[in-house]
Length: 356
Image (cartoon, rainbow, N blue to C red; front, side, top):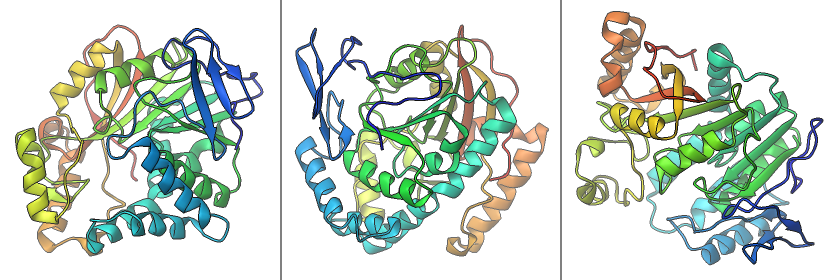
């Protein structure tokens, strides 16, 4: 993986995430002369974070990454994911198994998301892609080869080590991995034709700042911003912990409720409702071109109860019927949104997503 994104369109330099000034490249760091700030390159990945992942300190994040690197050469992608949870105490085994399955399913979800983007609003030229909150790089493994330049960014340094392994196994695609905050992107204005925030909006510290930054780095006029996010008021289970009713509770009660049901904290997760999402997008001067309701086609029905399978069937029926589909804005499981930067305006009627 290279440090500096490059393509047939020319190099895409990093900028300081604090002042957006040019950076001086050193052998093991980038340096911002105006800020007198140094951004290290660690294990081959530049680290532009202005604050740590809310789950873990920067020092502990590096330590976990080092533990993963000890097994890196002798491990497959699945081994590294399993290794990560083995060195993460306090997570029940059943939940670990779900998380591992989720990581293994990442590329399938990435292919489904890319199919949705192509069917709804394909970015012109497919020149440069930025995946914000890339996690284990499921979307990048599915779609990076479609672009001249592809960049995966996450605040969790440790997950970028796992992402690198997935990308190697997916064919050694030339993807640049960057550690940074979604609210402070180390890229110049108008740098990307497609910005992806797959299940990122509910995890960032400042959703409004994240959306503004995504809009800032979009290519003017033709750039596409794709977002997917769960609905706070979904009538189904919360997708992070598979517990019903979390979004209806006050923030101060969520941790207590999830600890009682699953034995883990809910953590710094902030799912949004449809109305909250519209206000956030408007505040970032992003206009909605398409609002889609995700297919649940890839859900593992073997893990569902009979009642849950019945709910999935009802949801599939509702999203196919225009007269009922409108209700999914309020109580559906989540949203897929394709935006362009510009003056906010009324959203077009929602439509079905492509099958995933």
